[in-house]
Amino acid sequence: GAANRIITERGLADMPLFLLGSCGDINPYLSCGEQKDETVSDLIGKQYVDDLEKGITAGGKKLNSTELSGVLHTYEFPTVAMSVNDLEKEAEEWHNFANTHENPMAVAFYENFVNRLQEMIILAKQGKEMRSFHDLQILRIGPASIYFIPGEFFIEPGMELLEKSPAEFSFAATVSNGN
Image 1 (cartoon, one colour):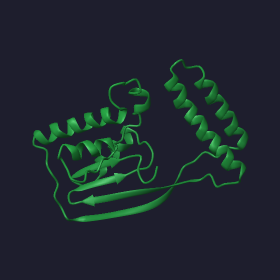
Image 2 (cartoon, rainbow, N blue to C red):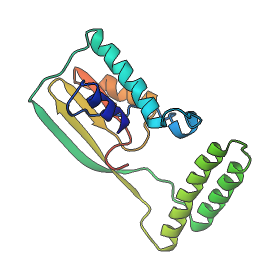
Image 3 (tube, rainbow, N blue to C red):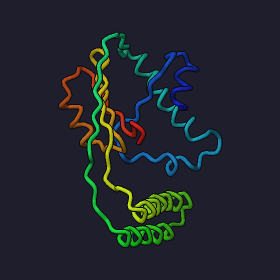
């Protein structure tokens, strides 16, 4: 949201599309939570847009194409089956681990993970299906392909995906499709 707003405010695009790329190690809540003068999203958004402007100034290409195509498939992702007891033990271990930290933001981060485990425990006790299904999507705009991947996707598989792409310009967009 912040990056798109800043792009629009600076007149770089009327309708920007922000893509979170492959990394898997970015957590602005932990890394920028001490900032007092700007909101974390504004600070990070400004950094992204500054880099974008540098790229445009250095002769970056603007893609103008009306050729569009796309595909969307739902796949079952691998999961590890765990009993309610296993989930409860895991939640307790993470809760204890969280309480070993002095940094309140680290505690909050790990407690958030404990909350997700507790939600899974409730669902498991209700007999809910715990298999994981996610949408994978490819959007082609002229010579560019955008691969939309749920969750955080790490650099190595992201680079492998982009290297195998037949498109002239390839992008991996993570934390997508409702995840």
